[in-house]
Structure formats: structure tokens, C-alpha cells
Length: 113
Length: 111
Image (tube, rainbow over all chains, first blue to last red; front, top):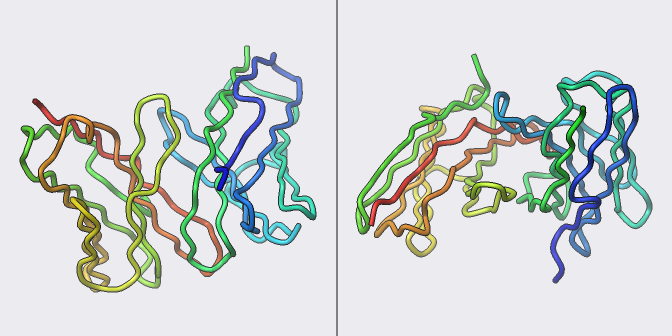
């Protein structure tokens, strides 16, 4: 089975711009979660989608949003980028919502200048 | 208090030794626990999951869970230089998939 894929792998943006990241889960996986990883804060949960519905949301401002499509693919969007948004954004998929193992994609490295 | 705490290390062990990694969590109602390995510049890779009190073994890896003490650990037997990485403890604190991660323990296995 193919693993979780994320595109693009690298992005450079400037402050104030917006960005959209994409994630394709493992085939058959219906839950997609997004995380932000920075050296100072570690891995922090952004949100989780299941069956096109956001079921959990972490403590991030409203500039961070996401969605999931009927084929379980997910996108996350960050508007009005700030320097502090520079991070590795990771997507993880799992079979369903209940206590299942999550498998991570390679991540998108976002640099905000 | 952070939800999941780990000693940041670094932890150094000689090749062939046992590496012991520890993690504590704050939510007594947590039901599922995971260990991930992350090499520098790579994404986290799942090593073990554990749901019940006691030990779970998979090859050279043993996860140990004590819910009463809110403690989970990972033992790596016969450590190899290729085990050198950051090990992340993750806890699912609700019925969904909202994982809380520790900040990771950096392990170096010295040949």
C-alpha cells in the first residue's frame, strides 16, 4: 500500500500571503489529522477530519483551517502568514477515529520570509 | 503542566545495551499510547502502540504501560547505531484522534 503523501514538500512564502497544503491518506483510511512541528514547541495538533467533518481542533488561531473531501484527501490552509508559521506541517492518517494508529506523511516544510 | 512529558535527553548508550525511554501523561482517562521514532529531517515513524497495562514486545522493542502511575516506557534491547533518533511518546486523550506528543527524547547509540 502506498503511504501518506503530502504536496508540496517545500514552500517559501512571504508574510501576509496564504498557503494551501494537500494530504492524501493511505487507501482505506478515513481519518486525517494535521500537526505543526517546530523546534521550540514540538508536534502540536491542529485538527482532525473524519468523513469530511472536522471532529477535533487544537489551540490554533482561525487563520488555520482545513477540509476533507469525499475521497478522504485533505487540505489545510493558512491565511495571512506570519513568520512564526514557519514549520514542518505533518499530515497523519488512520483507519477511523477511535484510538487507531496514525501514520505520518513526509511533511511540508513551510518557510515564511 | 504539559499533557505529555518526556526527558529531552540526550540519552547515550553503547551499542548492544538497553535503552530506556520514559513518558508520563496528565489525563488519567487516556486510552491509547504510541511510540514514534523520528530521524533528523524525516517525519515520525510508528514503532509501537499499547492500549492495556503491562508489556508489549515487538522484536527488540518493548513498550510498558502503567495507567495507575500514568506512565509509559519504551525499552530498546541490543541497541544499534541505526536506533539513533528522537523518540516521541504520543497519547490519545479522547475518543477521537487528537494525539498529544511529548517533546521527544534524543537517543544516540555509540558504536
